[in-house]
Length: 404
Image 1 (cartoon, helix red, strand yellow):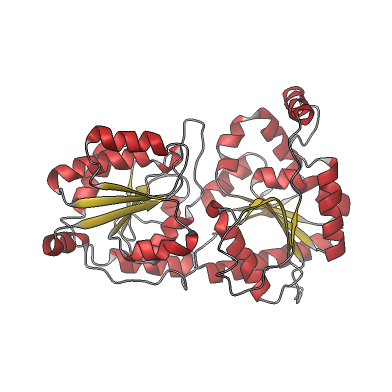
Image 2 (cartoon, one colour):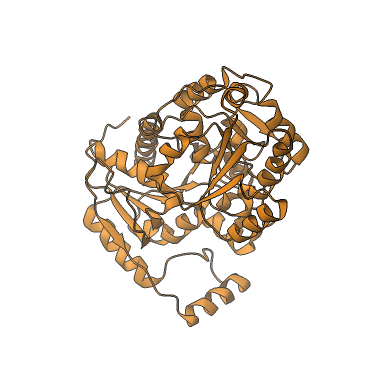
């Protein structure tokens, strides 16, 4: 295998430093830390974030090109997708393509890594014009809800014909292969989490903690959107309070369903037991985890078909030593083995969810946290996974050089 000292990648992300996409920054930060100074960022939106200030690496070149939406382009896009007038109906506009093509050429980038299927489609025309390899990572919604759009399915054929593919779970990989992604050009690559940021804390088991201190703190940190399953967590937690009234549920995040969830809490009369923390900066998540006893994340398939990949926040909680209760959803069973490294329940099954929460007070589960940390270290350690990502790049370099 060719051993290249510099990756020279161009990373494409619609939102650079977005709060729910810190994993993209962590991957890129690793490349910079390894001396890959020629890695550049292509984006439509640069989000204000404290990630840079707390990073050990210098902030590298970010090429932002935000194209204001024009009514003409909006309606033209609708018409093109309705009539299927192009093979790729999600490609960049001409001025965007010129801007990013110039940045890539000046940087002598050897590969473009796009995040999300829509991101791959956006930058695909640039990669084809420059005749350099493209790799596209599919994360969740782009391999679930988006598949209901005929225009997107048509466009994916064009992407699969050119791009290498990374799936963040075996679950997504199988689905993409069924859609036509060439098996020989698709990789499973777990995102992983930073074990240096999330230190393992040996905790008193939940049942003993409640008996000794008379309180137990549950937490979920995620956007308030349907697929995060907050309303099912609130319902199951409300039932739990009938038996164990001194529990507190901390909900960190923001989103379109926040007011609806606040109303649900009020309707159930549990305002004193459910605390809304507001937006939580990624740098503050470890502190919240240190003060919690159990992590909840009831992922569900949304009414629009939206699904998760494997939520990185679950990995972070497991790395921190928190017992996790989640669902048999998408790639999550690849992360959690029920009864061994955490607990899984059926989506939207409040009875099973409630009974599992009750079991925390009966079962000491002394090995759950240790097993979870071991699982993260073995398969979801970001340091190891980032090294695997560079190996994928170099495999693509070697394969691509033989066919171009």
